Length: 147
Image (cartoon, rainbow, N blue to C red; front, side, top):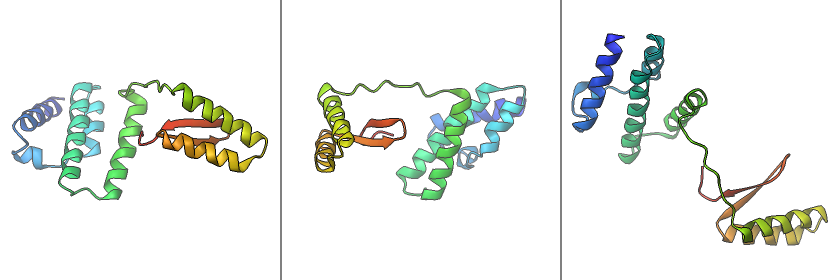
């Protein structure tokens, strides 16, 4: 427990100082987070490692030193962690009425098998910055460029 607290404190100090010490240069390992949790559920240290991993990854992206495979692995790990911690708040997306009506019209065109109209409506929706995804549960609208 004491080691994790000291390491977390050092990471915070290094991060505020611009990351110039040897601890800040050591890449955060996923096991750092897990070891902190194993240490009597030391959530403070675990979150310190989590946020430091994000800072280091952002720095690596800014410096063009992060390859796609590594970025994908980190993102998958953060998503797995978030399923437990639920750090990310859900944000309600409000679809503008015009876009909602176009999506409704598009769905009607699809039911009528009017593929040309359906495609035209999809294009109009796209022009307004939205994307339609056809799922087994019906069409889903997402803001283009949103994760």
